Each structure stands twice: as structure tokens, then as C-alpha cells.
Length: 127
Image 1 (spheres, rainbow, N blue to C red):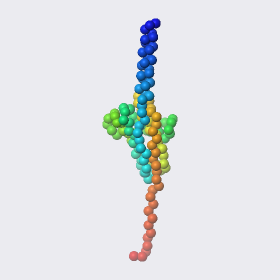
Image 2: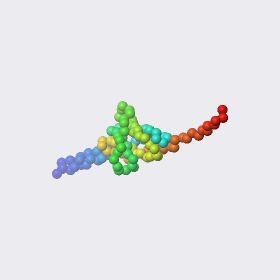
Image 3: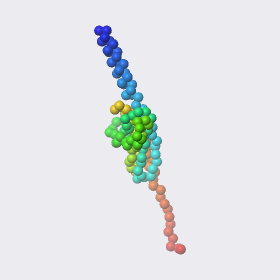
Image 4: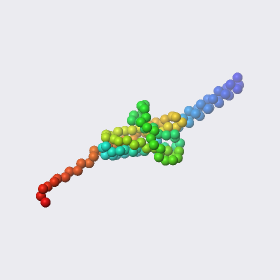
């Protein structure tokens, strides 16, 4: 009976340690961007802690992820990934870090689409 208590306490400590290590996945840092309509957009996410990757979404919670992004730095810290897409309207994307199979909270990243500039010109037949 005495050893059973020690084993149960040990299991509890191990479970708390595992839960703590899974819950420490911090959201990545990212900045919003502005582009012209129809332009390609490259969004970047950076994690300054050890993560196994990033996942990009179009919703703040739930849903299937669009992509895991493309890792662009050959190291584990910082972990930098990019997601490239084409935007015709202002869109907010969301990116999460993945640590040990568990996702962090999502960071919002807005791609603001500005109208393409117009050029006004007049032609005259007078030379």
C-alpha cells in the first residue's frame, strides 16, 4: 500500500510535467502586410522558442489548416516559415505554432489589399 501511494504521486508529477510542457507552446510573431490587388502575398511567422512548425488558417479557431508554411531558416530556433498566396481582397490569416503535436493560440495576420493605382493621361493631336 505504501509503494502504491508513491507510484501514484510519481505518476501525478509526470502527468503535470507533460501537461506543462505541452501547454508552453507560444504563439508565433508575425506582421500584417499591404499589397496591390491581385499581387502575390508572402506572410512570415517567427517563433523564438523550439517548435516543430507553423500552421496557417483562415479562421481564428477551428477549421482545417491551409498549409504548414515553408521553413526558411535551417535551425530550430528561431523557427521561421512563410506562406505565399494571391489576394484580391483584404484577408486576415491566422498562424499557430506547433509544439509536440499541440498548437498554440493563433496570431492574426492581415493582408490589406489596396486598389491598383490608376494612371490618367490625355492624348492631344496637337504637336
